Image 1 (cartoon, rainbow, N blue to C red):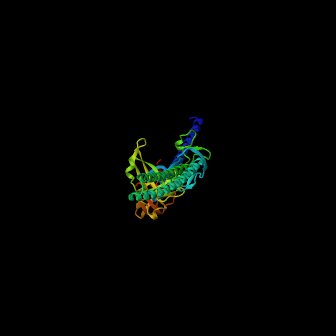
Image 2: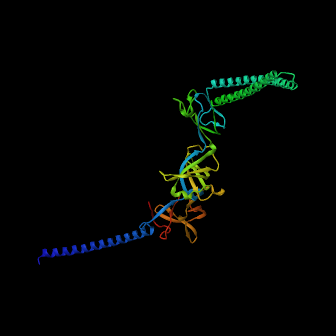
Image 3: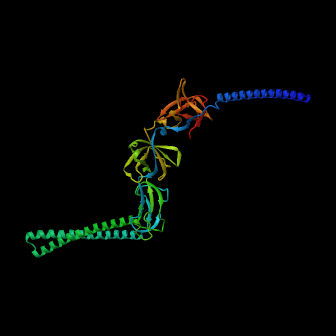
Length: 406
């Protein structure tokens, strides 16, 4: 073999040795990388990152009330005065004086407004004068009757003795009978004068618009100088002067679905919530269930009475009524921290709950109090606003990864 060929063979052998060394190093690096990857996977698994997440339902720990826990049914409606009137005049006339405005408190019989009544006062004065004339005529008739009666009795006695003629006796008798009739007529005239005065007084009273009951003026529809008339029958006349309501008759009227009506009983406990006072609750009772249904809405009107009326409650306020299983006790009227009973589990060391922390849960011991319906009182272990797992399963444990169901 030529010298040049031998030198080429030595170079090829060196190249093969270098290639084997490079391949060995690559395998070593691959094994190192694989080991590191396995270690990372093990660390991630034990840290929980690679463990499968359990889907759970979450519920918030919050302040609630016993009434909410005992609520069987809720319904919406309005505060309505059971005694409400549109007060109008019994006579047509011009409004001379208006004594009230919106919010005025009136008593039964108080004068709300007065119509122009000079003609009615004059008619009353005329009737009283006619009574005085009738009284004077009656006195004259009584005097004439007395004189005629005396004369008749004397003539009667003389006739019995035969001392006077029949003609003289007949004249005395006729005068007496005439006096009796005149006296009766005078008395009737006096009675008529009294009746005329009564009519004049009634007509005058019609010019005074009075409150029909104790209450508060809600709205006014007429002002001084405007013409008012019964039913607004006159052209451009106002039918009602004011509307008023008896604030002691306020009830909450709500529509209860026919399908839930069996849950409502007359006298049953209820709690009234008003949109105007969202942080306050007004205890009440079912006053009446109107014995007819609204076919268009499939509801029955139910009236709920306030146990104690608040002066701030006004007619037509929006109201929501919660119908309760039973009346609240004195110590059950304040708020408490609660969660559904289904969020509490029995553990070997007592009661516990799964507190949600990010994508994991922590099993925390809790101390519970009284239970109302499906809600239990939390005395210790959880704070307001905490999220806990509702109806936890046996798959969960401390540190389990979870995802919250939408």
